[in-house]
Length: 299
Image (cartoon, rainbow, N blue to C red; front, side, top):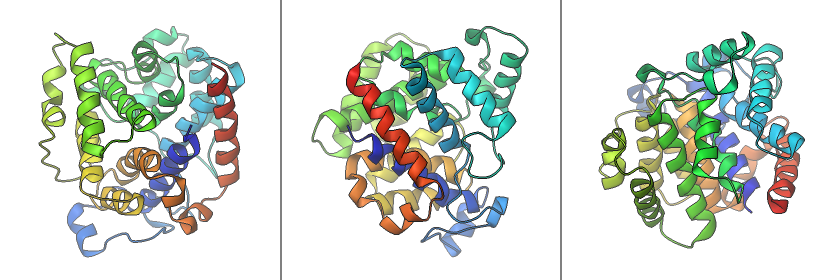
């Protein structure tokens, strides 16, 4: 099912970007990332992943444990990530404002459907970065994807972005097409499904594949534009994630989201072996991928 391809692809992309998060594109043009590094922005060891991978793994572990998409249980795992550094290699060092506010609401007793941020300012990429596991679940509906996004990011823009991303991943899983064809195929489905939605126009650059990517921004639609541009402008996993990292700013998340699709499209064997070995606790990731695949095969 290529679960390992996508999730390891995401994890490696995330770890590549962690040391240079917030660096400008101009800085990285002069000092490009070419290999896995340590320290930098958060002074973490080489191969350290961030909240992108941690919350992706939390989602997978909850689904494996519950043998279902249990929204309350997923949120409990997110809470354990923030409060107890679960799913971290070391200590938690990164999480988004919209995500933490949603977890605070959950801790305060709000219904899980009421926790996610709904303001236009709550459209960071914090649900897009962790939504990939939903693409592998055969019977997961668009509504299921929206609900998992809405645990932290409940605005329609974030939910549409997550549905579109998972649809592109599913297209890659189902069909042997060029990347541009996967994007076009998925966009047509999304336009039909969300016909009449007032926020659909915000995705026009993606629908037209007319990108003006200046840096790796954290606004969810701009993140998705950057991810797709990196995929369209490269022809292998390594080049795609390095292009994403070297866009600057939100380096870990843009590279993680790019890496998820690039891993699926090019395959696990195309991910540099030395980068995989640079990830502490990679065996935990691989074992969880195996468990998650067993779940997906039985539904």
